Picture 1 (cartoon, rainbow, N blue to C red):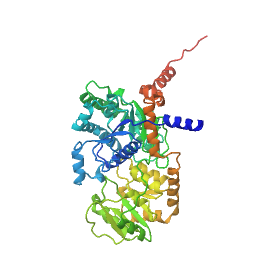
Picture 2 (cartoon, rainbow, N blue to C red):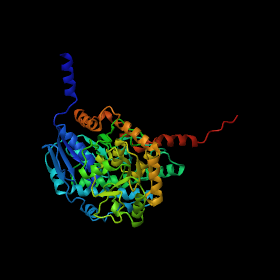
Picture 3 (cartoon, helix red, strand yellow):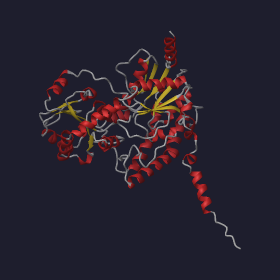
Length: 496
C-alpha cells in the first residue's frame, strides 16, 4: 500500500492538469506547421487547452479544447506566388553568403503582418490568460513579448537544431571552428578559408541583429503592444528552447541545460497506403526509388535541361521510380516512373521495397529517412539543406549531388553508387537504430518539459549566467584588452 501511495504521489507531481497553452507558428510554410501541429496535438491529447496561431487550418482537430486563431491572408503575397508557381526556390539563393545572411535578416519585418492581423489583434486585446506561451523562433523576436503580455513563461521552438537565432538568446556556445552557420554550405569539417568565412558570417550576423533586427523588432512591439516591454527584456527570457534535432540526424554541438532536443516529433506510425500505391510498391520486384523535392521546391519548376537529365537517368534504371510531381502531366514519362501530385511520404518510406530516397535534404525529410533506415541522395537547394546533406554524406548513409551538377551521368553515378554499395544501407540502418534508441520518445519529451516549465514557474534555474552577460564580458574582451594594455606598458629600466 505504501508503494502504491508513493507512485500515485510521484505521478501527481509529474503532471499538470489542463493547462492553457498558446502556440504561435506564423510562417506560411507547411513544413514548419507540421512541427507545430505535432506538438499541439500531443499536448491537446494529454488534456491541455490549446490555442494555435498560424496561417493554416487543422483538418482534424484532436479535441474540443483545440482552438485556432487563423492568420488568413497575413502572408497573402507569398502564398499567392506559391500557388501560381511564381516563387521558384531553385533560384532563391545567390552565391554570396554574406548578402544571403543580410537579405534573410531583412525579412524580419514581415512579423508585423502577424501583429496587425485582425484575428491576432483580437487575441492580444482579449483578457485571456495562459500558463505558457510557445513561439517558433524564426526572424520574429517581437513575438516573444506575448509571454510578457500574457504574464506567462516563454518556450521557443526552433524548427532547426541549435543555430545563431537561438544560441545568442540562451548563452549557448557555438565555436566557429566546427559549428558552421546554418546558411553556409559547409560541414563540420571546414578548411581554413571556410572557417574564416564562417567566423566573418558570425560577426556579420551579430552586427546585423544588434544594429537592425532587434531595434526593428522593438519598434514593432512598441507599436502593437503599447506600454509593452523593451525587446531586450523579452528576447533573452526563454524558459526552454525546443530543438528539432537529434544526434542521429544532426551534428553533435554544445547545448546549455534549457535546450531540449525533440527531433522526430512529427514522425508518425506508418499507416496503410492507398491501394494503387500499395500495388506499385508491392509489385516493384527490383525495388523502389522515391523522389520528392519537398513542399517548397517543386519538381515541376526544374529547368528543361535538368528535367531531361532526370528522365533519361530514370529510364535506364531497373527500379521503379515514384516521383512527387506537382503538374497534371509529365511528358515523355518512362514506363518505370510513376508520379503523384501528393504522396504520403512517411508511409512510402516505411515500405520494405524502398531502396533510395532522392530528396532536397530538408530536415523533416532527412529525419523520416533516418527513422525508416532509407539511404538518401540529397540535392540541396537552400537554407539548412546543404548541412543536412553533408552530414548524411559524412556519416555514409547518403550522397550529395549539387543542383548545378545535375546531369544524366552524375545522376546515374550517384544512384548506382548508393544502390550497389551496401555500406549506405548498412549505415542508414545504423542511424535508424540511434534514432530509436531513446529513453523516451520526442512527443513524451516535449510534453514533459512543457509541464515542467509550468510546474516550476518558468524554470529559471536552467538558465546559464552567460545569457545575462554583456557581449564584451561573454567573449572576455575586457580581459584581453587588460592583458594587452599590461603587455604594452613600457618597463622601467633600472640603473646602478
